[in-house]
Image (cartoon, rainbow, N blue to C red; front, side, top):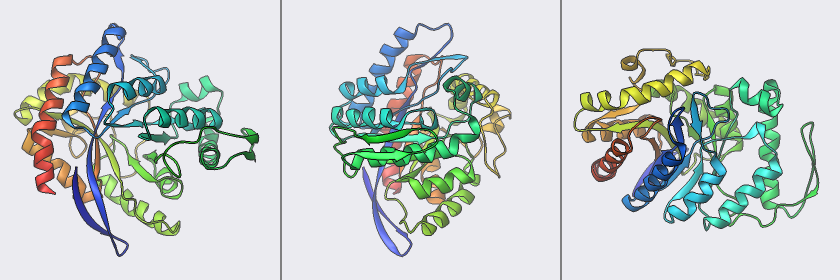
Length: 352
């Protein structure tokens, strides 16, 4: 990792730049999901050997047209496969779940990993998920805040009594507590402005998502900093940003190789009506237009420059990279992951 200093609110913060990898455990409808699972484990083991700092497992329910393995059991398995990497839930759909259940599961994961778990949480946006869990979508923000407040208390207090319209804790406990003190890092994923402000108020950091154009993120970063000031909180020492990343010898080759798989993913996301903030052109564009100012795609030199440019524009210091998508051959995913580690990491570190 590379150390760098930046000034936020009149103070100098020393940050460590980290490189993270996203895995989905996702397959197309006709694929052999057992084979894809074994490929995913091999992918994670390789990332650990190549020096990636973190691995993130994504989460959705009812993920048609894809098959998708679930987050918590996959993170538990990754703990055995990748002993050197931090493990991130990216992101848990918190309004759908019981806070006591989440608190105990992630305290357990923190013990299993020796204190390397990250709790990434978000609101969710898909009607099929809210209906399946019996959660009215118009309650999602209030449920999110109540659940997260309860989780923090369960992680730091011996017993918790707390009554809300959504659950009741009566002398409830989470034992054991997590290893990390006061608790594992809480990354709040947010696209909408109100959610960005909530991330400032309730999270350890804003977990910047993969889909919003960087130009739109610059406006939201100003909003985030104002919300931090309003909450009396400093700028976080760790600011993660998730992006779709693909590297090949040339930009033209990179686009040609990744377009069938990355394009299919974002067609699905557009059909799921993913919410985008003011200033973003949206996901319903041609692939060539979609990738402008949004994803990091190109040669090693170009991708390193794109990462460094994003660092300057929004201040991120942990790049969480999606490099493989449903249907992509394992050999292609491995090739780009290795090229990123061997050729992009050094260029970014040198640029810092």
